[in-house]
Image (cartoon, rainbow, N blue to C red; front, side, top):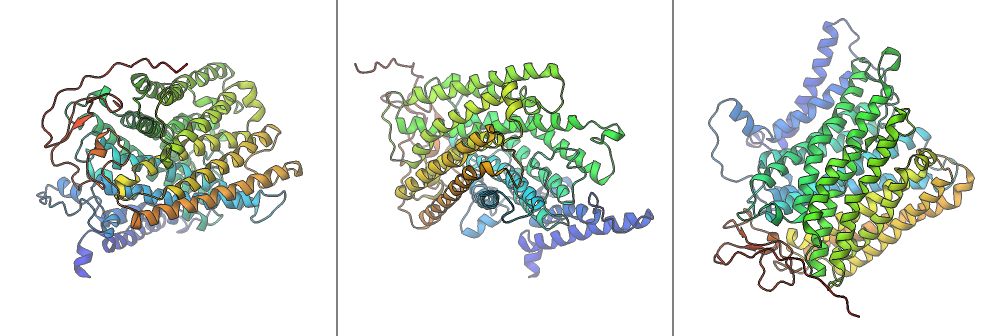
Length: 637
Protein backbone atom coordinates (compact mmCIF):
# COMPACT_ATOMS: atom_id res chain seq x y z
CA UNK A 1 0.00 0.00 0.00
CA UNK A 2 2.77 2.44 0.91
CA UNK A 3 4.52 1.75 -2.39
CA UNK A 4 1.26 2.28 -4.29
CA UNK A 5 0.74 5.64 -2.59
CA UNK A 6 4.24 6.78 -3.51
CA UNK A 7 3.71 5.93 -7.19
CA UNK A 8 1.46 7.97 -9.52
CA UNK A 9 -1.87 6.27 -10.04
CA UNK A 10 -5.35 5.84 -8.66
CA UNK A 11 -4.40 5.55 -4.98
CA UNK A 12 -2.39 8.74 -5.04
CA UNK A 13 -5.05 10.35 -7.24
CA UNK A 14 -7.78 9.57 -4.71
CA UNK A 15 -5.68 11.06 -1.92
CA UNK A 16 -5.02 14.12 -4.06
CA UNK A 17 -8.74 14.45 -4.76
CA UNK A 18 -9.57 14.50 -1.05
CA UNK A 19 -6.72 16.83 -0.19
CA UNK A 20 -7.63 19.17 -3.06
CA UNK A 21 -11.26 19.34 -1.94
CA UNK A 22 -10.19 19.89 1.67
CA UNK A 23 -7.79 22.65 0.63
CA UNK A 24 -10.51 24.47 -1.32
CA UNK A 25 -13.04 24.11 1.49
CA UNK A 26 -10.56 25.22 4.14
CA UNK A 27 -9.45 28.19 2.05
CA UNK A 28 -13.03 29.47 1.74
CA UNK A 29 -13.82 28.96 5.42
CA UNK A 30 -10.60 30.66 6.52
CA UNK A 31 -10.93 33.67 4.22
CA UNK A 32 -14.58 34.24 5.13
CA UNK A 33 -13.82 33.94 8.83
CA UNK A 34 -10.92 36.40 8.54
CA UNK A 35 -13.17 38.81 6.63
CA UNK A 36 -15.88 38.64 9.28
CA UNK A 37 -18.40 37.04 6.90
CA UNK A 38 -20.72 34.12 7.56
CA UNK A 39 -18.64 30.96 7.15
CA UNK A 40 -21.26 29.33 4.92
CA UNK A 41 -22.98 31.45 2.29
CA UNK A 42 -25.96 29.60 0.81
CA UNK A 43 -27.52 32.04 -1.62
CA UNK A 44 -28.26 30.18 -4.84
CA UNK A 45 -25.60 32.11 -6.76
CA UNK A 46 -23.04 31.57 -3.99
CA UNK A 47 -22.07 28.40 -2.13
CA UNK A 48 -18.32 29.18 -2.32
CA UNK A 49 -17.59 26.30 0.06
CA UNK A 50 -18.86 23.99 -2.71
CA UNK A 51 -17.75 25.91 -5.80
CA UNK A 52 -14.09 26.39 -4.83
CA UNK A 53 -13.53 22.69 -3.91
CA UNK A 54 -15.16 21.86 -7.25
CA UNK A 55 -12.15 23.57 -8.84
CA UNK A 56 -9.38 22.45 -6.50
CA UNK A 57 -10.42 18.79 -6.15
CA UNK A 58 -9.85 17.90 -9.84
CA UNK A 59 -6.41 19.50 -9.75
CA UNK A 60 -5.62 17.51 -6.61
CA UNK A 61 -6.60 14.33 -8.44
CA UNK A 62 -4.46 15.20 -11.47
CA UNK A 63 -1.46 16.02 -9.25
CA UNK A 64 -1.80 12.67 -7.47
CA UNK A 65 -2.50 10.74 -10.67
CA UNK A 66 0.84 11.85 -12.09
CA UNK A 67 -0.35 14.22 -14.81
CA UNK A 68 2.12 16.94 -13.80
CA UNK A 69 5.05 14.92 -12.40
CA UNK A 70 7.38 15.40 -15.38
CA UNK A 71 6.71 19.12 -15.66
CA UNK A 72 7.06 19.69 -11.92
CA UNK A 73 10.46 17.99 -11.90
CA UNK A 74 11.56 20.14 -14.80
CA UNK A 75 10.26 23.35 -13.17
CA UNK A 76 12.00 22.46 -9.91
CA UNK A 77 15.31 21.94 -11.71
CA UNK A 78 15.56 18.28 -10.71
CA UNK A 79 17.26 15.71 -12.95
CA UNK A 80 14.93 14.18 -15.52
CA UNK A 81 14.06 10.56 -14.80
CA UNK A 82 15.32 8.38 -17.69
CA UNK A 83 12.42 7.42 -19.93
CA UNK A 84 11.78 3.67 -19.74
CA UNK A 85 8.52 3.92 -21.75
CA UNK A 86 6.65 2.12 -18.97
CA UNK A 87 3.82 4.61 -19.41
CA UNK A 88 3.66 4.20 -23.19
CA UNK A 89 1.56 1.57 -24.93
CA UNK A 90 -1.05 -0.93 -23.82
CA UNK A 91 0.13 -4.39 -22.77
CA UNK A 92 -3.02 -5.23 -20.79
CA UNK A 93 -6.46 -3.76 -20.22
CA UNK A 94 -5.18 -2.04 -17.08
CA UNK A 95 -2.99 0.27 -19.19
CA UNK A 96 -6.13 1.97 -20.51
CA UNK A 97 -6.85 3.23 -16.98
CA UNK A 98 -3.46 4.88 -16.53
CA UNK A 99 -1.83 8.16 -17.53
CA UNK A 100 -0.57 6.72 -20.82
CA UNK A 101 1.37 8.69 -23.44
CA UNK A 102 0.71 6.43 -26.45
CA UNK A 103 -1.56 8.23 -28.91
CA UNK A 104 -3.27 4.94 -29.77
CA UNK A 105 -4.14 4.26 -26.14
CA UNK A 106 -5.34 7.85 -25.73
CA UNK A 107 -7.44 7.58 -28.88
CA UNK A 108 -9.08 4.43 -27.54
CA UNK A 109 -9.64 6.10 -24.16
CA UNK A 110 -11.34 9.01 -25.90
CA UNK A 111 -13.60 6.84 -28.05
CA UNK A 112 -14.73 4.53 -25.23
CA UNK A 113 -15.26 7.38 -22.74
CA UNK A 114 -17.19 9.54 -25.19
CA UNK A 115 -19.38 6.62 -26.21
CA UNK A 116 -20.31 6.22 -22.53
CA UNK A 117 -21.30 9.88 -22.46
CA UNK A 118 -23.22 9.32 -25.72
CA UNK A 119 -25.31 6.66 -23.98
CA UNK A 120 -25.88 8.95 -20.99
CA UNK A 121 -26.90 11.83 -23.26
CA UNK A 122 -29.17 9.46 -25.16
CA UNK A 123 -30.91 8.35 -21.95
CA UNK A 124 -31.52 12.01 -21.08
CA UNK A 125 -32.99 12.50 -24.56
CA UNK A 126 -35.35 9.55 -24.09
CA UNK A 127 -36.55 11.00 -20.78
CA UNK A 128 -37.28 14.24 -22.63
CA UNK A 129 -39.19 12.42 -25.37
CA UNK A 130 -41.12 10.36 -22.79
CA UNK A 131 -42.23 13.61 -21.17
CA UNK A 132 -43.24 15.09 -24.53
CA UNK A 133 -45.04 12.00 -25.83
CA UNK A 134 -48.37 13.57 -24.83
CA UNK A 135 -49.50 17.01 -23.65
CA UNK A 136 -49.50 17.65 -19.91
CA UNK A 137 -47.13 16.57 -17.16
CA UNK A 138 -46.04 12.95 -17.63
CA UNK A 139 -42.87 12.14 -15.70
CA UNK A 140 -40.95 15.19 -14.46
CA UNK A 141 -41.68 18.70 -13.24
CA UNK A 142 -41.01 21.68 -15.49
CA UNK A 143 -37.81 22.76 -13.71
CA UNK A 144 -36.44 19.21 -13.85
CA UNK A 145 -37.29 19.11 -17.56
CA UNK A 146 -35.22 22.27 -18.07
CA UNK A 147 -32.27 20.55 -16.42
CA UNK A 148 -32.73 17.46 -18.59
CA UNK A 149 -32.59 19.24 -21.94
CA UNK A 150 -29.76 21.52 -20.79
CA UNK A 151 -27.61 18.61 -19.60
CA UNK A 152 -28.50 16.50 -22.65
CA UNK A 153 -27.20 19.19 -25.01
CA UNK A 154 -24.02 19.83 -23.02
CA UNK A 155 -23.19 16.13 -22.77
CA UNK A 156 -23.74 15.53 -26.47
CA UNK A 157 -21.77 18.57 -27.63
CA UNK A 158 -18.90 18.93 -25.15
CA UNK A 159 -18.51 15.30 -24.06
CA UNK A 160 -19.41 13.31 -27.18
CA UNK A 161 -19.29 14.90 -30.63
CA UNK A 162 -16.32 17.25 -30.23
CA UNK A 163 -14.05 14.89 -28.24
CA UNK A 164 -14.83 11.66 -30.10
CA UNK A 165 -13.54 13.23 -33.30
CA UNK A 166 -10.39 14.12 -31.35
CA UNK A 167 -10.20 10.50 -30.22
CA UNK A 168 -10.46 9.02 -33.70
CA UNK A 169 -7.89 11.51 -34.99
CA UNK A 170 -5.62 10.79 -32.02
CA UNK A 171 -5.47 7.18 -33.06
CA UNK A 172 -5.32 7.54 -36.83
CA UNK A 173 -3.66 10.86 -37.65
CA UNK A 174 -0.07 10.21 -36.46
CA UNK A 175 -0.11 6.90 -38.32
CA UNK A 176 -1.59 8.59 -41.39
CA UNK A 177 1.22 11.16 -41.61
CA UNK A 178 3.97 8.68 -40.73
CA UNK A 179 4.71 10.10 -37.26
CA UNK A 180 5.80 7.96 -34.29
CA UNK A 181 3.42 9.77 -31.92
CA UNK A 182 1.83 13.14 -31.25
CA UNK A 183 4.16 16.10 -30.78
CA UNK A 184 3.42 16.43 -27.04
CA UNK A 185 2.52 13.00 -25.63
CA UNK A 186 2.14 14.11 -21.99
CA UNK A 187 -0.06 17.04 -22.94
CA UNK A 188 -2.07 14.61 -25.06
CA UNK A 189 -2.67 12.37 -22.03
CA UNK A 190 -3.60 15.34 -19.85
CA UNK A 191 -6.07 16.51 -22.52
CA UNK A 192 -7.94 13.25 -22.23
CA UNK A 193 -8.11 13.16 -18.43
CA UNK A 194 -9.59 16.65 -18.33
CA UNK A 195 -12.59 15.30 -20.25
CA UNK A 196 -14.07 12.82 -17.72
CA UNK A 197 -13.51 15.47 -15.04
CA UNK A 198 -15.69 17.87 -17.04
CA UNK A 199 -18.32 15.16 -17.50
CA UNK A 200 -18.48 14.32 -13.81
CA UNK A 201 -18.88 18.01 -12.96
CA UNK A 202 -21.71 18.45 -15.48
CA UNK A 203 -23.61 15.38 -14.27
CA UNK A 204 -22.96 16.13 -10.59
CA UNK A 205 -25.04 19.30 -11.02
CA UNK A 206 -28.14 17.10 -10.59
CA UNK A 207 -27.06 16.67 -6.95
CA UNK A 208 -26.70 20.41 -6.32
CA UNK A 209 -29.32 22.34 -4.31
CA UNK A 210 -31.90 23.54 -6.84
CA UNK A 211 -31.06 20.81 -9.34
CA UNK A 212 -29.02 20.72 -12.55
CA UNK A 213 -28.19 23.81 -14.58
CA UNK A 214 -31.36 24.73 -16.45
CA UNK A 215 -30.54 27.72 -18.68
CA UNK A 216 -29.94 25.58 -21.75
CA UNK A 217 -26.55 24.72 -23.22
CA UNK A 218 -26.36 28.36 -24.33
CA UNK A 219 -26.57 29.59 -20.71
CA UNK A 220 -27.96 32.98 -21.72
CA UNK A 221 -27.51 35.85 -19.25
CA UNK A 222 -29.27 37.17 -17.22
CA UNK A 223 -31.11 33.84 -16.80
CA UNK A 224 -27.83 32.09 -15.98
CA UNK A 225 -26.46 34.79 -13.68
CA UNK A 226 -29.37 34.31 -11.25
CA UNK A 227 -29.87 30.56 -11.68
CA UNK A 228 -29.38 28.04 -8.82
CA UNK A 229 -26.03 26.50 -7.88
CA UNK A 230 -26.10 23.95 -10.71
CA UNK A 231 -25.28 26.75 -13.16
CA UNK A 232 -21.87 27.18 -11.50
CA UNK A 233 -21.19 23.49 -12.21
CA UNK A 234 -21.79 24.27 -15.89
CA UNK A 235 -19.49 27.33 -15.79
CA UNK A 236 -16.67 25.27 -14.25
CA UNK A 237 -17.21 22.15 -16.37
CA UNK A 238 -16.93 24.18 -19.58
CA UNK A 239 -13.46 25.35 -18.49
CA UNK A 240 -12.18 21.76 -18.16
CA UNK A 241 -13.79 20.64 -21.43
CA UNK A 242 -12.51 23.75 -23.23
CA UNK A 243 -8.97 23.32 -21.89
CA UNK A 244 -9.03 19.72 -23.13
CA UNK A 245 -10.11 20.86 -26.62
CA UNK A 246 -7.54 23.66 -26.86
CA UNK A 247 -4.64 21.49 -25.70
CA UNK A 248 -5.63 18.74 -28.15
CA UNK A 249 -5.95 21.22 -31.02
CA UNK A 250 -2.53 22.75 -30.34
CA UNK A 251 -1.08 19.24 -30.29
CA UNK A 252 -2.66 18.42 -33.65
CA UNK A 253 -1.40 21.65 -35.22
CA UNK A 254 2.20 21.08 -34.13
CA UNK A 255 2.06 17.39 -35.09
CA UNK A 256 0.68 18.06 -38.58
CA UNK A 257 2.99 20.97 -39.32
CA UNK A 258 6.25 19.51 -38.01
CA UNK A 259 6.02 15.70 -37.97
CA UNK A 260 4.89 14.64 -41.43
CA UNK A 261 6.90 11.84 -43.03
CA UNK A 262 9.53 12.77 -45.64
CA UNK A 263 7.86 13.49 -48.97
CA UNK A 264 4.46 14.37 -47.51
CA UNK A 265 3.93 17.93 -48.65
CA UNK A 266 0.62 19.71 -48.11
CA UNK A 267 -0.88 18.35 -51.32
CA UNK A 268 -0.07 14.78 -50.36
CA UNK A 269 -1.84 14.96 -47.01
CA UNK A 270 -5.01 12.86 -46.73
CA UNK A 271 -8.17 14.93 -46.39
CA UNK A 272 -8.69 13.69 -42.84
CA UNK A 273 -5.45 15.47 -41.96
CA UNK A 274 -6.64 18.63 -43.72
CA UNK A 275 -9.94 18.39 -41.85
CA UNK A 276 -8.24 18.12 -38.47
CA UNK A 277 -5.85 20.93 -39.33
CA UNK A 278 -8.85 23.14 -40.12
CA UNK A 279 -10.76 22.03 -37.03
CA UNK A 280 -7.77 22.72 -34.80
CA UNK A 281 -7.49 26.26 -36.16
CA UNK A 282 -11.16 26.77 -35.25
CA UNK A 283 -10.76 25.31 -31.76
CA UNK A 284 -7.73 27.43 -30.91
CA UNK A 285 -9.33 30.60 -32.25
CA UNK A 286 -12.89 30.20 -30.98
CA UNK A 287 -12.89 28.16 -27.74
CA UNK A 288 -11.39 30.96 -25.59
CA UNK A 289 -14.54 32.99 -26.29
CA UNK A 290 -16.92 30.47 -24.71
CA UNK A 291 -14.49 30.02 -21.81
CA UNK A 292 -14.38 33.78 -21.34
CA UNK A 293 -18.17 34.11 -21.48
CA UNK A 294 -18.59 31.43 -18.80
CA UNK A 295 -15.93 33.04 -16.61
CA UNK A 296 -17.83 36.34 -16.84
CA UNK A 297 -21.09 34.67 -15.82
CA UNK A 298 -19.25 32.85 -13.03
CA UNK A 299 -17.79 36.11 -11.72
CA UNK A 300 -21.22 37.78 -11.91
CA UNK A 301 -22.60 34.95 -9.79
CA UNK A 302 -19.80 34.41 -7.27
CA UNK A 303 -18.06 37.76 -6.97
CA UNK A 304 -20.97 40.11 -7.58
CA UNK A 305 -19.56 41.58 -10.78
CA UNK A 306 -21.91 43.10 -13.34
CA UNK A 307 -20.77 42.10 -16.81
CA UNK A 308 -24.35 41.23 -17.77
CA UNK A 309 -26.37 43.14 -15.15
CA UNK A 310 -28.18 45.85 -17.09
CA UNK A 311 -29.20 47.78 -13.96
CA UNK A 312 -25.52 48.15 -13.00
CA UNK A 313 -24.28 49.10 -16.47
CA UNK A 314 -23.76 45.59 -17.82
CA UNK A 315 -24.54 44.59 -21.41
CA UNK A 316 -26.88 41.61 -21.69
CA UNK A 317 -26.66 41.30 -25.49
CA UNK A 318 -22.86 41.13 -25.36
CA UNK A 319 -23.14 37.65 -23.79
CA UNK A 320 -24.85 36.35 -26.92
CA UNK A 321 -22.26 37.97 -29.19
CA UNK A 322 -19.38 36.40 -27.24
CA UNK A 323 -21.08 33.02 -26.90
CA UNK A 324 -22.07 32.67 -30.55
CA UNK A 325 -18.68 33.88 -31.77
CA UNK A 326 -17.55 30.50 -30.44
CA UNK A 327 -20.67 28.45 -30.87
CA UNK A 328 -21.25 28.87 -34.56
CA UNK A 329 -17.65 27.94 -35.38
CA UNK A 330 -18.32 25.09 -32.96
CA UNK A 331 -20.87 23.75 -35.46
CA UNK A 332 -18.00 23.34 -37.94
CA UNK A 333 -15.76 21.96 -35.19
CA UNK A 334 -18.43 19.25 -34.98
CA UNK A 335 -18.62 18.81 -38.78
CA UNK A 336 -15.21 19.23 -40.43
CA UNK A 337 -13.60 16.07 -38.98
CA UNK A 338 -16.59 14.13 -40.29
CA UNK A 339 -16.03 15.61 -43.75
CA UNK A 340 -12.50 14.21 -43.64
CA UNK A 341 -13.71 10.78 -42.49
CA UNK A 342 -16.29 10.57 -45.28
CA UNK A 343 -13.72 11.61 -47.89
CA UNK A 344 -11.42 8.76 -46.82
CA UNK A 345 -14.20 6.17 -46.83
CA UNK A 346 -15.85 7.17 -50.10
CA UNK A 347 -12.58 7.23 -52.03
CA UNK A 348 -11.56 3.86 -50.61
CA UNK A 349 -14.84 2.09 -51.28
CA UNK A 350 -15.54 3.71 -54.64
CA UNK A 351 -11.96 2.81 -55.71
CA UNK A 352 -11.49 6.28 -57.20
CA UNK A 353 -9.34 9.33 -56.45
CA UNK A 354 -11.11 12.12 -54.58
CA UNK A 355 -12.68 14.38 -57.20
CA UNK A 356 -11.27 17.91 -56.87
CA UNK A 357 -8.86 17.04 -54.06
CA UNK A 358 -7.18 20.46 -53.88
CA UNK A 359 -10.45 22.33 -54.00
CA UNK A 360 -11.73 20.09 -51.21
CA UNK A 361 -8.76 21.06 -49.05
CA UNK A 362 -9.19 24.76 -49.84
CA UNK A 363 -12.93 24.51 -49.11
CA UNK A 364 -12.07 23.34 -45.59
CA UNK A 365 -9.90 26.43 -45.07
CA UNK A 366 -12.66 28.58 -46.60
CA UNK A 367 -15.15 27.26 -44.06
CA UNK A 368 -12.72 28.16 -41.25
CA UNK A 369 -12.42 31.75 -42.48
CA UNK A 370 -16.13 32.29 -43.14
CA UNK A 371 -17.28 30.61 -39.90
CA UNK A 372 -16.15 33.65 -37.91
CA UNK A 373 -18.48 35.92 -39.89
CA UNK A 374 -21.85 34.23 -39.35
CA UNK A 375 -22.32 34.14 -35.56
CA UNK A 376 -25.06 36.79 -35.36
CA UNK A 377 -27.62 34.87 -37.43
CA UNK A 378 -28.51 33.29 -34.08
CA UNK A 379 -29.47 36.77 -32.89
CA UNK A 380 -31.84 38.13 -35.52
CA UNK A 381 -34.57 38.48 -32.84
CA UNK A 382 -32.26 39.23 -29.89
CA UNK A 383 -32.26 43.00 -30.19
CA UNK A 384 -28.91 43.47 -31.91
CA UNK A 385 -28.16 46.29 -34.35
CA UNK A 386 -30.57 46.21 -37.29
CA UNK A 387 -27.83 47.15 -39.77
CA UNK A 388 -25.94 43.95 -38.90
CA UNK A 389 -28.73 41.62 -40.01
CA UNK A 390 -28.32 41.76 -43.79
CA UNK A 391 -24.49 41.40 -43.84
CA UNK A 392 -24.78 38.40 -41.53
CA UNK A 393 -27.50 36.89 -43.72
CA UNK A 394 -25.22 37.24 -46.76
CA UNK A 395 -22.23 35.58 -45.06
CA UNK A 396 -24.51 32.82 -43.73
CA UNK A 397 -25.64 32.01 -47.25
CA UNK A 398 -22.10 32.39 -48.59
CA UNK A 399 -20.67 29.73 -46.27
CA UNK A 400 -22.92 27.20 -48.00
CA UNK A 401 -20.66 27.51 -51.07
CA UNK A 402 -17.55 25.69 -49.73
CA UNK A 403 -19.87 23.17 -48.07
CA UNK A 404 -21.59 22.62 -51.42
CA UNK A 405 -18.19 22.10 -53.06
CA UNK A 406 -17.62 19.17 -50.74
CA UNK A 407 -20.99 17.59 -51.54
CA UNK A 408 -20.33 17.86 -55.29
CA UNK A 409 -16.84 16.43 -54.78
CA UNK A 410 -18.22 13.38 -52.98
CA UNK A 411 -20.78 12.88 -55.74
CA UNK A 412 -18.05 13.30 -58.36
CA UNK A 413 -15.95 10.71 -56.58
CA UNK A 414 -18.86 8.28 -56.57
CA UNK A 415 -19.78 8.92 -60.22
CA UNK A 416 -18.86 5.96 -62.39
CA UNK A 417 -16.90 4.40 -59.54
CA UNK A 418 -16.88 0.79 -58.44
CA UNK A 419 -19.02 1.48 -55.36
CA UNK A 420 -18.62 -1.22 -52.72
CA UNK A 421 -21.42 -1.21 -50.15
CA UNK A 422 -20.35 -4.33 -48.27
CA UNK A 423 -18.95 -2.05 -45.56
CA UNK A 424 -21.23 -0.47 -42.95
CA UNK A 425 -18.86 2.52 -42.99
CA UNK A 426 -19.69 3.14 -46.65
CA UNK A 427 -23.43 2.87 -45.98
CA UNK A 428 -23.22 5.50 -43.24
CA UNK A 429 -21.15 7.73 -45.53
CA UNK A 430 -23.74 7.56 -48.31
CA UNK A 431 -26.57 8.21 -45.84
CA UNK A 432 -24.60 11.15 -44.48
CA UNK A 433 -24.46 12.87 -47.87
CA UNK A 434 -28.24 12.71 -48.27
CA UNK A 435 -29.15 13.57 -44.68
CA UNK A 436 -26.59 16.36 -44.32
CA UNK A 437 -27.72 17.94 -47.58
CA UNK A 438 -31.36 17.97 -46.49
CA UNK A 439 -30.38 19.34 -43.08
CA UNK A 440 -28.22 21.96 -44.74
CA UNK A 441 -31.19 23.24 -46.73
CA UNK A 442 -33.03 24.01 -43.50
CA UNK A 443 -29.88 25.82 -42.37
CA UNK A 444 -30.00 28.05 -45.42
CA UNK A 445 -33.66 28.75 -44.59
CA UNK A 446 -32.71 29.79 -41.06
CA UNK A 447 -30.09 32.11 -42.49
CA UNK A 448 -32.81 34.15 -44.21
CA UNK A 449 -34.10 36.90 -41.94
CA UNK A 450 -37.88 36.60 -42.60
CA UNK A 451 -37.93 32.82 -42.17
CA UNK A 452 -35.69 32.97 -39.10
CA UNK A 453 -37.98 35.51 -37.43
CA UNK A 454 -40.98 33.26 -38.10
CA UNK A 455 -39.48 30.02 -36.72
CA UNK A 456 -37.20 31.45 -34.02
CA UNK A 457 -37.55 29.57 -30.72
CA UNK A 458 -39.75 26.92 -32.32
CA UNK A 459 -39.17 23.22 -32.83
CA UNK A 460 -37.96 23.97 -36.35
CA UNK A 461 -34.65 25.09 -34.81
CA UNK A 462 -34.49 21.90 -32.70
CA UNK A 463 -35.17 19.85 -35.83
CA UNK A 464 -32.46 21.59 -37.84
CA UNK A 465 -29.65 21.25 -35.30
CA UNK A 466 -30.49 17.61 -34.53
CA UNK A 467 -30.89 16.61 -38.17
CA UNK A 468 -27.53 18.19 -39.02
CA UNK A 469 -25.64 16.94 -35.97
CA UNK A 470 -27.12 13.44 -35.86
CA UNK A 471 -27.43 12.93 -39.61
CA UNK A 472 -24.13 14.73 -40.13
CA UNK A 473 -21.73 14.38 -37.21
CA UNK A 474 -23.03 11.15 -35.64
CA UNK A 475 -23.35 9.33 -38.98
CA UNK A 476 -19.73 10.19 -39.77
CA UNK A 477 -18.65 9.12 -36.28
CA UNK A 478 -20.25 5.72 -36.81
CA UNK A 479 -18.67 5.55 -40.27
CA UNK A 480 -15.25 6.30 -38.82
CA UNK A 481 -15.59 3.74 -36.02
CA UNK A 482 -16.66 1.01 -38.44
CA UNK A 483 -13.90 1.97 -40.91
CA UNK A 484 -11.00 1.98 -38.43
CA UNK A 485 -12.36 -0.65 -36.01
CA UNK A 486 -10.23 -3.41 -37.64
CA UNK A 487 -7.12 -1.24 -37.35
CA UNK A 488 -7.76 -0.27 -33.74
CA UNK A 489 -8.70 -3.71 -32.44
CA UNK A 490 -7.23 -6.20 -34.90
CA UNK A 491 -10.72 -7.71 -35.25
CA UNK A 492 -13.53 -7.52 -37.79
CA UNK A 493 -17.03 -6.57 -36.68
CA UNK A 494 -20.26 -8.37 -37.66
CA UNK A 495 -21.46 -6.76 -40.90
CA UNK A 496 -24.98 -8.15 -40.47
CA UNK A 497 -25.35 -6.40 -37.13
CA UNK A 498 -23.74 -3.35 -38.70
CA UNK A 499 -26.50 -3.26 -41.31
CA UNK A 500 -29.19 -3.64 -38.65
CA UNK A 501 -27.63 -0.71 -36.81
CA UNK A 502 -27.40 1.31 -40.02
CA UNK A 503 -30.99 0.90 -41.14
CA UNK A 504 -32.40 1.36 -37.64
CA UNK A 505 -30.36 4.54 -37.19
CA UNK A 506 -31.28 6.03 -40.57
CA UNK A 507 -34.99 5.27 -40.25
CA UNK A 508 -35.06 6.40 -36.62
CA UNK A 509 -33.25 9.65 -37.47
CA UNK A 510 -35.58 10.62 -40.29
CA UNK A 511 -38.78 9.66 -38.45
CA UNK A 512 -37.66 11.48 -35.30
CA UNK A 513 -36.40 14.77 -36.69
CA UNK A 514 -38.30 15.41 -39.96
CA UNK A 515 -41.70 15.82 -38.20
CA UNK A 516 -40.09 18.32 -35.80
CA UNK A 517 -39.70 20.68 -38.76
CA UNK A 518 -43.44 20.54 -39.40
CA UNK A 519 -44.60 21.15 -35.84
CA UNK A 520 -42.03 23.93 -35.59
CA UNK A 521 -43.32 25.73 -38.66
CA UNK A 522 -46.78 25.31 -37.20
CA UNK A 523 -45.69 27.18 -34.07
CA UNK A 524 -44.75 24.63 -31.41
CA UNK A 525 -42.23 26.34 -29.07
CA UNK A 526 -39.01 24.67 -27.99
CA UNK A 527 -37.71 24.28 -24.42
CA UNK A 528 -41.16 23.75 -22.89
CA UNK A 529 -42.36 20.75 -20.90
CA UNK A 530 -45.96 21.11 -22.09
CA UNK A 531 -47.59 22.15 -25.36
CA UNK A 532 -50.93 22.58 -27.08
CA UNK A 533 -52.94 19.41 -27.70
CA UNK A 534 -52.89 20.01 -31.48
CA UNK A 535 -49.28 18.78 -31.53
CA UNK A 536 -49.96 15.62 -29.53
CA UNK A 537 -50.15 13.07 -32.36
CA UNK A 538 -46.97 14.27 -34.04
CA UNK A 539 -45.11 14.28 -30.73
CA UNK A 540 -46.23 10.74 -29.98
CA UNK A 541 -44.82 9.63 -33.34
CA UNK A 542 -41.58 11.54 -32.68
CA UNK A 543 -41.19 9.92 -29.26
CA UNK A 544 -41.81 6.39 -30.58
CA UNK A 545 -39.24 7.00 -33.33
CA UNK A 546 -36.75 8.35 -30.78
CA UNK A 547 -37.05 5.16 -28.73
CA UNK A 548 -36.50 3.12 -31.92
CA UNK A 549 -33.39 5.21 -32.60
CA UNK A 550 -32.17 4.70 -29.04
CA UNK A 551 -32.79 0.94 -29.03
CA UNK A 552 -30.85 0.56 -32.27
CA UNK A 553 -27.71 1.90 -30.58
CA UNK A 554 -27.75 -1.16 -28.31
CA UNK A 555 -27.11 -3.26 -31.43
CA UNK A 556 -24.04 -1.13 -32.16
CA UNK A 557 -22.85 -1.45 -28.56
CA UNK A 558 -23.24 -5.24 -28.60
CA UNK A 559 -21.50 -5.52 -31.97
CA UNK A 560 -18.50 -3.48 -30.89
CA UNK A 561 -18.01 -5.18 -27.51
CA UNK A 562 -18.42 -8.76 -28.77
CA UNK A 563 -16.42 -8.18 -31.97
CA UNK A 564 -13.56 -6.55 -30.03
CA UNK A 565 -13.23 -9.74 -28.01
CA UNK A 566 -14.36 -12.51 -30.35
CA UNK A 567 -14.47 -11.09 -33.89
CA UNK A 568 -12.47 -12.70 -36.71
CA UNK A 569 -8.91 -11.42 -36.89
CA UNK A 570 -8.45 -8.56 -39.31
CA UNK A 571 -5.66 -8.32 -41.84
CA UNK A 572 -3.42 -5.31 -42.08
CA UNK A 573 -5.54 -3.74 -44.83
CA UNK A 574 -9.03 -5.26 -45.11
CA UNK A 575 -10.35 -2.30 -47.16
CA UNK A 576 -7.37 -2.19 -49.59
CA UNK A 577 -6.82 1.47 -48.71
CA UNK A 578 -3.74 3.47 -49.74
CA UNK A 579 -3.01 5.64 -46.70
CA UNK A 580 -0.13 4.82 -44.38
CA UNK A 581 -2.08 3.58 -41.35
CA UNK A 582 -3.23 0.59 -43.41
CA UNK A 583 0.35 -0.41 -44.26
CA UNK A 584 1.19 -1.46 -40.67
CA UNK A 585 -0.16 -4.32 -38.58
CA UNK A 586 -3.62 -4.35 -36.97
CA UNK A 587 -3.43 -3.15 -34.26
CA UNK A 588 -0.28 -1.12 -34.99
CA UNK A 589 3.02 -1.60 -33.15
CA UNK A 590 3.57 0.34 -29.92
CA UNK A 591 5.91 2.82 -31.61
CA UNK A 592 4.07 2.75 -34.97
CA UNK A 593 7.02 2.20 -37.34
CA UNK A 594 10.40 0.48 -37.27
CA UNK A 595 11.48 3.05 -39.84
CA UNK A 596 9.68 6.26 -40.79
CA UNK A 597 7.95 5.75 -44.16
CA UNK A 598 8.73 7.87 -47.22
CA UNK A 599 5.78 9.38 -49.08
CA UNK A 600 6.12 9.21 -52.87
CA UNK A 601 2.62 9.99 -54.17
CA UNK A 602 -0.91 11.12 -53.42
CA UNK A 603 -3.13 9.21 -50.98
CA UNK A 604 -5.97 8.42 -53.39
CA UNK A 605 -4.35 7.13 -56.59
CA UNK A 606 -6.78 4.25 -57.05
CA UNK A 607 -6.81 2.82 -60.55
CA UNK A 608 -3.36 4.19 -61.43
CA UNK A 609 -1.03 1.29 -62.27
CA UNK A 610 2.07 1.23 -60.06
CA UNK A 611 1.00 4.20 -57.97
CA UNK A 612 2.11 4.21 -54.33
CA UNK A 613 1.34 6.64 -51.54
CA UNK A 614 4.24 5.64 -49.31
CA UNK A 615 7.21 3.29 -49.19
CA UNK A 616 7.55 1.55 -45.86
CA UNK A 617 10.86 0.76 -44.18
CA UNK A 618 12.64 -2.20 -45.74
CA UNK A 619 10.83 -1.98 -49.08
CA UNK A 620 13.63 -0.20 -50.93
CA UNK A 621 13.72 3.26 -52.31
CA UNK A 622 11.56 2.95 -55.41
CA UNK A 623 10.80 5.74 -57.79
CA UNK A 624 9.02 8.99 -57.05
CA UNK A 625 5.47 8.71 -58.33
CA UNK A 626 4.25 11.93 -59.94
CA UNK A 627 0.77 13.13 -59.11
CA UNK A 628 -1.65 12.06 -61.83
CA UNK A 629 -3.83 14.50 -63.67
CA UNK A 630 -7.60 14.03 -63.48
CA UNK A 631 -8.85 11.85 -66.28
CA UNK A 632 -12.01 12.43 -68.25
CA UNK A 633 -14.63 9.77 -67.71
CA UNK A 634 -17.13 9.20 -70.47
CA UNK A 635 -20.40 7.68 -69.37
CA UNK A 636 -21.64 4.77 -71.46
CA UNK A 637 -24.27 5.68 -74.01
